[in-house]
Amino acid sequence: MEFLETLYNEIVGFFNFGGLIEIIETDNYKALLTQDGIGKALGPLIPVLLLVEIIRALFYRRLTFTQYKISFFTYVFNRFISRFISIGMVGLCIAFFEPYAIFKTEFTWYWFIYGYVVWEFAHFIYHFLGHKVRLFWCLHSTHHAPEYMNLSVTYTHFFLEAPYADIIRTTICILLGVNPSLLFLIMFIDGTWGAFIHIGENIMVDARLGFLNKIILTPSHHRVHHAKNPLYMDTNFCNLLNIWDKAFGTLQDEKHEEAIEYGITRPMKSGDFLDAYFGEITLLLKDVYQAPTLKDKVLYIFMPPGWHHSGNHKTATIVKKEYFESVKL
Image 1 (cartoon, rainbow, N blue to C red):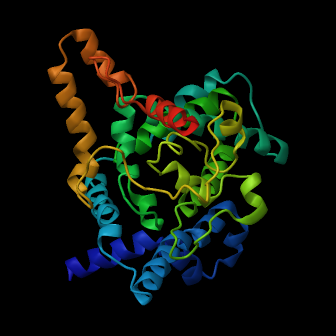
Image 2 (tube, rainbow, N blue to C red):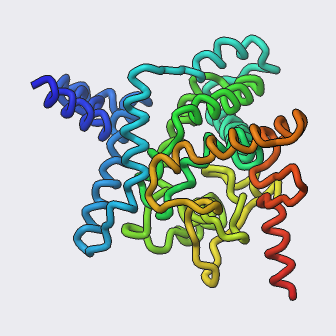
């Protein structure tokens, strides 16, 4: 009975039905007019869409376990880890850095716009570092390992990535004066959109969303971000607003003539959870161990993925440069 109860709680927890069930059981429908109530009502949205995505793929006989294998085992492993480790970096960063904010904002619509622009900047910084600093790439690469795009990928993260991301994003937002209550609202909106943009071709074949593709970052843009094609590598770091990708020259639209290839560039056994989760960390440790000098050991940790002490670098920047030079020929 204890096993069945645990299984039930895990299913309810995954689908985020708990808050909605609570509202229904208490007849407290006025809660739906509050931010917390809206969050509870929309909580099941992405998990239910994922279920629809799987059922639709099964109906059309396009479903293979390989498409969901890494995501499934990552979710299960992270749930196991979370029973022993709970890190609330958002709260810690707010408590520590709020006294040092350059100014204070309030919970108003115009400060919401300011806060979202700042949040996207903070997200860009975290995400950019996740691709350009090898240590951080070790935490982020698990999310890029799946060779398919579907909603399960939104659950595919190394367990330490969220604390690392929260330290950077929350600290920047708080120091730049974003009101904590406003920050939580922005995080909810951005988190929901950030999950949705992983929607797969089984539900949305063309994910450009019409005219919205020129205004915001759509699922099509995020598919590009997950691609290992040289044209697409290290692009579209923002989440919803594309302003910082435009500002820093990293915005890239999906090209009809350039089919997306998902995954990471190094050789990897398809659907291998252990390689997806620990592979980059293992390779980093190996490089650090074999590096000839202390300086090289440190550089392997902080230089971009693909950097090599011999000078034979294969970073994304170099791969993209070689690609564009070959296209011109």
